[in-house]
Image (cartoon, rainbow over all chains, first blue to last red):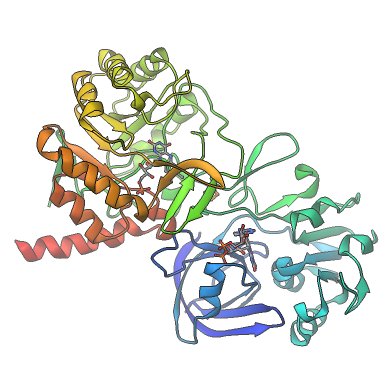
Length: 238
Length: 272
Ligand SMILES: Cc1cc2nc3c(=O)[nH]c(=O)nc-3n(C[C@H](O)[C@H](O)[C@H](O)COP(=O)(O)OP(=O)(O)OC[C@H]3O[C@@H](n4cnc5c(N)ncnc54)[C@H](O)[C@@H]3O)c2cc1C
Ligand SMILES: Cc1cc2nc3c(=O)[nH]c(=O)nc-3n(C[C@H](O)[C@H](O)[C@H](O)COP(=O)(O)O)c2cc1C
Ligand code: FES
């Protein structure tokens, strides 16, 4: 069951062009990879909580990997150690967990949910990560991913790893593919292996009540990103 | 402490505004009714409604624009929630609308038979068949309210849009048989999407409109618009509202009713 927790910040540091925040919630809870938390932004002019996928779980410590894109994430990046973050979760349906050979594709900050997923999968894990430039990740972050699976990076400017888009480098020698990233990237995954994707939308309630976050699937049905997702089968969406 | 709304006993003056919490199932799976006096589910229509195409929400500075478009599965699905509504330990008031008078009467007839529903909030702040808001036109307000009054025997609250010269729209609701008023629904706005603005930004406008009419209106009023804190609730109560609805604030603090109510309890105990 999702709950509201006070998460005391024990670390909030830049990693490459991203930030990594870790909070301690004082109890250990069960969270599936791909689930998300809504973090309250304690500014009177900000209404909606901001959604972040779980990056890592370590006993009572939860981490989120995020990119500063607007006033909410900027506010978050300025919180210091000891600040009590009001977080609500875990919410949504996570990725399926099984045994086998897996390809985990992350575009930009879409890599966030893949770390905990990689840790929880049983079998061979390969990360295929894409960004505009090599500076995006920072060395420590990449080695953290590399510690739990094979890793291949692709940059648009070719400054690190292969040059181009991740979708040009997908091979199909896997039992299942998991992907998170910009919608254009997800649309261009054209493979016949079972593929699960994590989608984004503006989130209001986060628990399926308000119908604010719906997206249209390929059958023309509205699906709630927060409750029916954020993880969907690729074939159901595109 | 006990509160009364047209004879309905409320244990607190805090009411859920129709919409943000849907029909309630998802919310009350996670949170209790603590702090709440009355639950009003999202507006129900006779037939299922698909709602507007996404994106449906957009945040402004201090506000939120929504264009959900009344997505709901229709009254027959809603009726299946009877056991759930019976299991809540607070009264439930239905919110309905229709695009024709006939739809409103049909809904009224169906809900009139439900002993677990204490009344109806008639949401007139959404488009009718002609694509206009019922609440833009005093004559339509009168007709819609009368259509419901003719078939429905319990409490009717009419929920109106925020408009200048509020009495012009309030009078026909009362003449049509409303027992109370919910003032007001969202404010029309645009920022990348067209929709209704809610949240703290609208409150000063709504307070001004209410101030104009509270002394002239005899029926109970539920205030709605921008309630985010205990002082917002007190402001509306002091103005003369009988109960106060909370909507958008549930997105920031899903436990907002509990938080505000514990403040209210302290305050009212002090005063005694
Ligand atoms: C289920 C879910 C999980 C997410 N997980 C992560 C994560 O792990 N790491 C991470 O960095 N981000 C994640 N996001 C995206 C994150 O929620 C947004 O970046 C954040 O809400 C932006 O807030 P802001 O106030 O900084 O930006 P705003 O000022 O609100 O917006 C700035 C810009 O970002 C865009 N934007 C705002 N909200 C979203 C959104 N939800 N999705 C896409 N674009 C948006 C706006 O259109 C605008 O261009 C997730 C989103 C969802 C729905
Ligand atoms: C997402 C959302 C959905 C809403 N849906 C409805 C609805 O179905 N029926 C209705 O009468 N009002 C609806 N409203 C309006 C609210 O009930 C309330 O009157 C309005 O938002 C102003 O109050 P607030 O600032 O506390 O949210 C909705 C508001 C929001 C934000
Ligand atoms: S955000 Fe309310 S239903 Fe998804």
